[in-house]
Length: 393
Ligand code: GLA
Image (cartoon, rainbow, N blue to C red):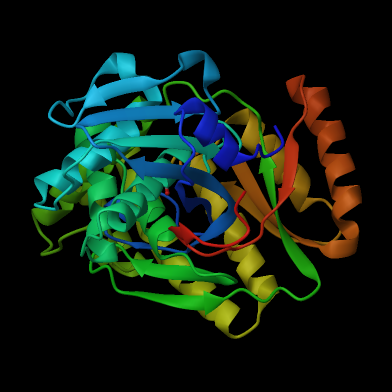
């Protein structure tokens, strides 16, 4: 869908002549550090130029009206500021509702109703964090409309609370953090235990980051995700009978190897191995990138995928077909799944003049094996959630 004229859509939908304010929050990719955030480890994500636009205006009464140009058949969803409980019938609007609810609960003065129009250009169900993007765009629009004083990290934590407590997915903090703190041309190394972070410029010279969408409909992703998390928690409990650690992220590979026998369940042992090794890989990958060693960075991406496939079991035939085929292509430095897995997207670092060949070869293998094609996008790393004052229509 080409981007509609959002302001005029807003005016005709909500029957107003006033010009609404416009806010934007990106989606994200994760370069490396997968399923480490809720294990107290490090992640290395970046915000991308795809994202969610929200146009908003305050109302004189207490009514909230939400409309998404991505879900026109659902129509306008209405509720009252005094009734922000989760409501299944409100479908996608539970994400902004949850955010309004928790921002109010945290004492911020959101005093009137609003009309809000959403439009997202993040590919649907692609695992590029469209839900965190909706949460964070709602956060910045509330901050802007009501002139709220809120630390960005607190807003990020409230976004995670929406996922965990309101929607019921036990996700970590990576997505909201990447989206809330994103910086053009940079990825963010985040310690998910302390929330200490630093930006690393992503200068790839004659390479680009390709995003490859499996186009697989993600089913049961939430429950499998929660299961992985529970397995890691069980492994941690076993290790804590002897070790004084707060999370799997506290362990070196050597410490893990010395103590892994404490983990009673074999599957949980594999999950924990991934969490520990992936955390160490992420730190190493960050250092290699700082040194300009793209080859080494790419190798670590590949190792990350293999561990997500063999130890964490979250890849599946679609992602494996794409990533394994990508590894064989000329000009590919590294490739791996990105995000939660179970479908969704892979990323690959590819030499610019090999991109066309890359797409053609991947789709030949992929459609032959899976029965439909993958989609390709070039990742542009843009800024995090903010109000837009220019280039808005
Ligand atoms: C999803 C979650 C994140 C993170 C990734 C896996 O995107 O929302 O918190 O756990 O999966 O790395």
